[in-house]
Image 1 (tube, rainbow, N blue to C red):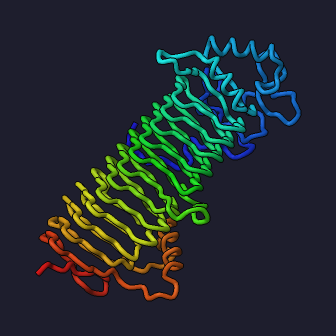
Image 2: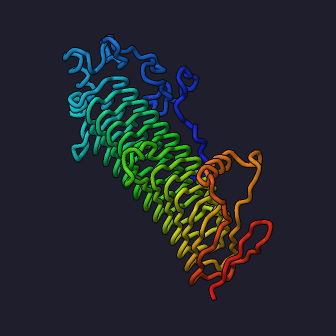
Length: 432
C-alpha cells in the first residue's frame, strides 16, 4: 500500500442510520470491517437479540437471552465454548465490571498468561463501569463500533490485529498507551469526553481518526508511531476544554509519521504540540485552525513540500524545523517564530499578518516571504474560505497589517531574495 496515498475522510467509515448497503466481510469468520448500524438496530446478519425488555444484546447460542440476562446454565455453557475457541460475541450487551471479569477469565491464555481473543464483537455494547483490556491480545480483530464506555477504558499494552472503535463514546479516560495495532485502526466519529492517551502506541496499518472529538483538555499521542497513513481529517481537539482547564494540550511530540499525515480541516481548541515530530511522507494541514498556539519545534519534514494553509490564533512556532524538500509554508498568525530553521532546498513563506523572526535560520537556498493576497471568496477553496472567515473574526476592528520581518540575526540569507511592491512581497533584511 502506498503510504503517501491520500485517504478520503469517509473511506471505510460507518454508514448513516438505515444504510445497510455495504456488507463487506459478511460470511467471513470475523467481519472486522462490517459497517454496523447504530445502537438499537439489528446487526446486518440478523442475529436474534435478547428477550429481556429493552435489551438489544445478541443472544447466546441456543438461548433467547444475552450474556447479561441468560440463566447460569447458559452462561456456563457459553464460557466453556469461549475457553475452547476464544470467540466472544457480546454485541449490544450491557456489560458490568463483574461480567467482563468473568468473560476475560474464561478466555484462552498466552504464554505470559494474558487473555487472547480470536474473535471479539463488542459493537454497540455498553460498559457501565471500568473496562480493563490492558495487555490483552485480539488475534482476529476487535469490533467496538458504537460501544459506550461509562468508566475508564484501559487498552494499554494491548495487541490488536485490527480494530474498529467507529462511533464509540468514552465517558471516562481512554488509555491506549503502548498498544499495538497490526492492521487497520478505526476511530472515526469517536467521542472522547475525558483524557485520551495514545502514548507510544504503534499503528502498523492505516489509522483513521476522522471526525473524532477529543472533548477534554488532554489528547496525548506523544511518541506514537504511524507506519502507514494517519488520518485526522475534521477532527476536533479540546472542544469543551475552555470550560474545564486552560492547562491542557494536544500532544504529538516526537511522534513518527512514516506515511501520509492528514489533518485537513481539523480544529485545535487546545494548544497543539508537534515538537520533534518526524514526517516521513506528505503532511496535510490544509484548513487547520489552531485556536491557541501551535508548535512544530524541531519537526522534520523529509518529503512534505507544504505546511498549511493553516491559522494559528495565538502564535506559530517552527523553531528548529528541518525540511529536505522545497517547502511552502502558508499561514495566518499574529506571530511566527522560526529560529534555527534548516531549509535545505529553500522555503517560501506565504503569510497573513504575522510578525516574523528567522534568527539563525539557513536560507541559503532560494527562499522568499510574501503576503497572502486578498482574494474574492469564490476564488478560494473551502479550507481557505474557512481560514479567511476565522481570520476576519480574529482581526475584527483591528488593522490587518502585512507580514513584518522583525529579525534575521545570524541567519544565512544567501538564497533569500524578494522585492516590495503591489504584489505584497517583502524583502528579507540582511544582517549588517
